[in-house]
Image (cartoon, rainbow, N blue to C red; front, side):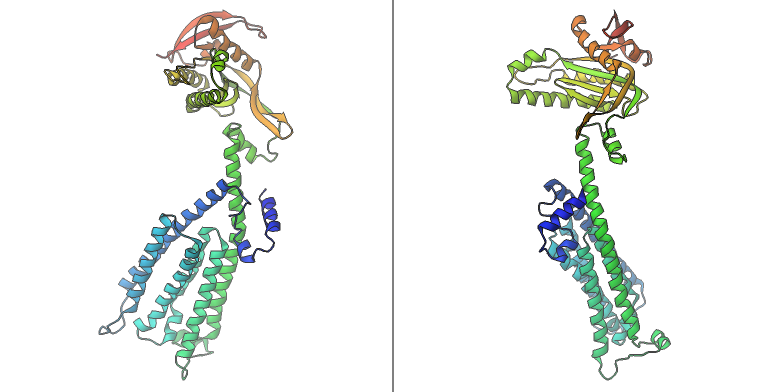
Length: 455
């Protein structure tokens, strides 16, 4: 899916610069607004993390400087390292504030990456003044390794352009540092070709500085390439996550996860047989009520009603399989495992009656809900044709549950529970009252039914 979006985007923007394409800038019509906002939110949170890392680095510099022996003259009026650290700390605090406020524009991010390098190189450059050594002294400072940290943390933004800009700034900055050493004293540029002399003195080995610059550029290139590929995976993750959330609105979340993780995808015709407790609800006299409401008010009332009764069902571990007009079909233990499915279904039925008590769905309109509950084997799976599928459960036990719900009219009750469900519940959990035995069409045995109240 992502590759199709990318290819379409590339065709549309054939004149777009390589620099823009490196970042796969999706602020155009390539992705829906909600997905772009999701990606942007992740990047903004990454900038907060980058700012925290920068603060940790500057405090680490300060701590190391405070415990390091000072070899410069105590009579010196100016110690540059504390000043550079203070400037860097101030800049990092400003950046952290802007990151938390989500007010970091792209130009500020580029400026920040360059400023990091400038301040770090400025700190390294100041070492020869701090310790009263020739400029070549700072070329051997291990603080150079922090350049790679600054390049690496830019990967947290998931945009290779920031890694590249930081790496190129670091390489150019180090070249200028070397040039400064070579030109500051034309009479003695301190160049040597002796490695031992280079390691034991303030001499300059051009090959060693070349290795540093090549290492900076190679690390930058490898990180940028890896990040370019990882960025595509980020977009795929955001798209698939959004698809999973959208899919879970049409099928149970457990089924949506199975479809996403399945090799075949959403394939119909594959059912699973399991024992579960089925809960079926219907609104008493809904046909007459619907005639008194305008269509838009009717839909609004139904959505409000469904949102109310969905709460107890999901809280007790049930899964709503279908909305059928004003009816709801829910299952416990399918597709979500539940060892106490019968008890939880009855608990959900009682809670539904509680949440609806006194609620108006219009001018003085109340919805009285009738519930049927039954336990037995069902077949659950995706059904449909072509590109349109849905999840549902089938079987005689599903039909029996619907008929039990309808029997509430005859007995003047709100909840009817089959004996098969009662057999799965510990005695004393609820106050059951037997209603008698009924013969149900399509079933070759009588069913003993009960109503239930809370203890």
